Amino acid sequence: MNEIKIFSPATVANVSCGFDVLGFCLNSVGDEMVIRKTSEKGIKIIRIEGFDLPFEAEKNVAGVSALAMYNTLKPDCGFEIEIYKFIKPGSGIGSSAASAVGSVFGMNELLGKPYNRTELTEFSIKGEALASKCEHADNLAPAMFGGFTLVKSVCPLEILQIPTPHHLYATIIHPQIEIKTAESRAILPKEVPLQDAITQWANVGSLIHGLHTSNYELIKSSLHDVIVEPHRSQFIPNFDEVKNEALVAGALGCGISGSGPSIFALSEGFDTAKKVEAEMKKIFSNTDIAFETYVSKINTEGIKVLSSK
Image (tube, rainbow, N blue to C red):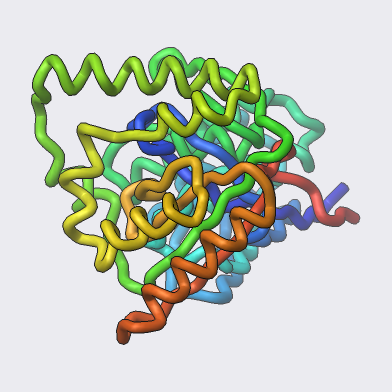
């Protein structure tokens, strides 16, 4: 193969109680990227469609992760990258992660898969850090592995794949405002009360057990964030109303997707997920804020090859 086209999916990070460690993968929205080998060495981004992003590899998250892998492996070729961006930067559904994962995954395929997916995620972290000013993998891991993932450790990187209940669906609403990940991290407290920490890690543990056992009631009782959401939600218009109406419509839980402004809800069954979407739409239709919604089964495959030649 000399050229490959890939689909790099959007993701939801944190999943309410799992700040910086939990995430899941979506199948209804994602970026497409084309990576091809060149005789000229180095990394070049030659095309970007969708949003205005830097072409310099050192300033683009896809380029930074690609350079991290390229400079480690030192292959006897170069690479051109085309980015077709469908995930809006600053949307809270893993835009930078999709770019960072996509470039290294495509290069790895063209080179005969010298690295496993954990190693590829390590390279991707370097690109993600450009956007968020912090090395974390809660969006990268589900994009790379699919399904639900838990990042047990970043150094050394250890990713656990968590089972996905078959009837679990996600509903996303993306208000068209931008919240920078780095700025959203800056408002968080450096210390939290011990009781809040106890509540939070109990929720994480029970959520993981609920996912393993497809216990939807346990999942419902675990999707609560007492540490991050109270601070970040103030920057998302209508958040409290959206959350309340999603729960009334039957959602298991509702929270901020990543650093926002997107809001996610998890539901048992497609019909309930669509009802939640209708309520979310109703709320934002009464505002001047443009928005998009998605209903998605959890994508258990993750990043994938669309075509190659």
